[in-house]
Amino acid sequence: MHFSSGINRPPYEAMDGFLQVTSGCSHASCKFCTFYKDAPFAVSPMEEIEEDIKEIRDRGWKFQRIFLQGADPFILPYNKLMQVAELIHQYLPSVESIGGYARVDNVRNKTVEQLRRLAEVGYSNFYFGNESGDDKLLERMNKGYKAEVVVEQLSKLDEAGMKYIVNFLGGLGGYNYGLSHARESAKVINQLHPTLVYASELTLFPDTPLSKDKQKGLFAEATEVERLEEMYEFIRCLDIDTVFKAEHVTIPVPIRGKLPEDKQNMLELLQEQIDIAKEGGLDGFRKRVMSL
Ligand code: SF4
Image (cartoon, rainbow, N blue to C red):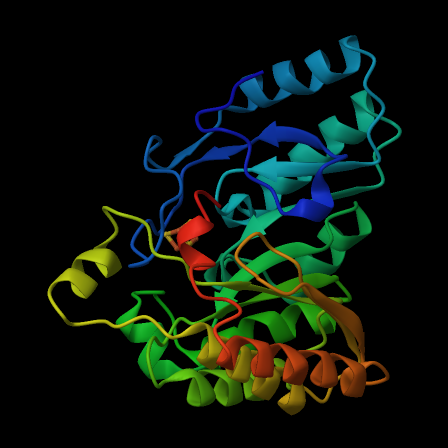
């Protein structure tokens, strides 16, 4: 198998087959990002992709889902994605769906009709790392698009009937910025229909531009209490039918539930944790997060 970086996947995709169709990230500029530093962006040749699919078949692995590798394999144009799906279904008949990580601007090069056909051949539940709906933050973190682009592009998936997941990155605004980040992010997501809202928390690692900003005094991290209050506000403001999960290694208190029916329980749990954190119960938690 060809893998330019280690396998990157969310916790829910542990049982998938992994296939590299792109390496690295087409953007590679987010200020907080630690991923794919070992691999410049590249599109895998179709011969290499076919070779890897055949290797999965020859090893006798029977996967229901393939999780494409690379930071944003959904950047591939429609025709190439259709070819990849055709090869997967030809050699791996047990596969029912194909996903991966994605950037919001990966949708730009596809029409609604093309997205509909991609959904029909099994593409579903890509994880879109939109992180925030706050334009000031998106710009500050070099995400490469504004909130209106998130709504515009992901609405195309809704129209096409392609399922998708959106990510919220707590703590992204740093000290004293959580409530705006929470409210603006919820405002964007409330215009969309993701199957899952998946939250994680900003954790700074050395050698990122954001860590350097911190050293220069240009960025201060949010406290653990602020992060919990931000998460509280984010969930409180979400008013769509979806599933919410915050269970990443960067989250001190795992939370999950269906919205809207479990909202009150999740908020009560968070309020308890806010009270504990105010007493110093989460002091030192973030220093213990060694990797993502
Ligand atoms: S899009 Fe994702 S992988 Fe690429 S630089 Fe930003 S956070 Fe990192």
